[in-house]
Image (tube, rainbow, N blue to C red):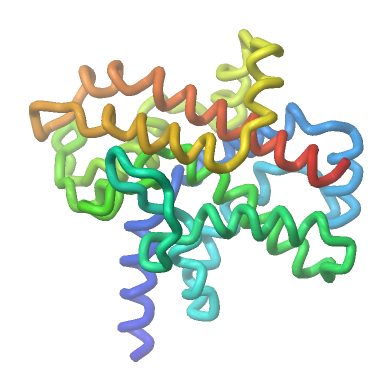
Length: 251
């Protein structure tokens, strides 16, 4: 029975991750850069520090705990092509959960431990929803069913977008975050910080089409170069928008 539970958790962990560990740390580090002084102060008061990148992977790590099995569908949502978002429990709860976490964090009556959990989930799920395949089309489990190779290694298109495109560049999360914010456009950052959850969900719905644009099953340099701009824009947007959410919560 124990082995069965462990195998089940490993399967879930391998199929519903958003950005990989490095990707989530990148968005966390970017968010940290654009936090207001008030937000940093209140987050530190709540959790003892305000390093967003340190909290960014907690929501994936707890999947190994059977007690958190209930959260497996909090990391994604489903919107078929050419349709508007409509909540159905079987299609992932990420949108509802982001809004729920925001309200919990704003509510002065929410117990501190509950706020800590809400904060760590919010940090993570906002990042997830910027990975285009975490807004699934309803046909292939967010690209997990699309089997391909990455430079000859068997994998699937979801995993390529979660981690392989990022890890391929051999940058630490701090190096990558610094690189993505090197030529910042403060006007654009300000606009992104005002975004709401459905703004970036609909973007992912539209952008996911590019993830499927390949003719050969063994994806290599051509796919990497074709995908790099979209990948990095979504990482940057995820971090900036997370800062916007946190700055509004912790005024």
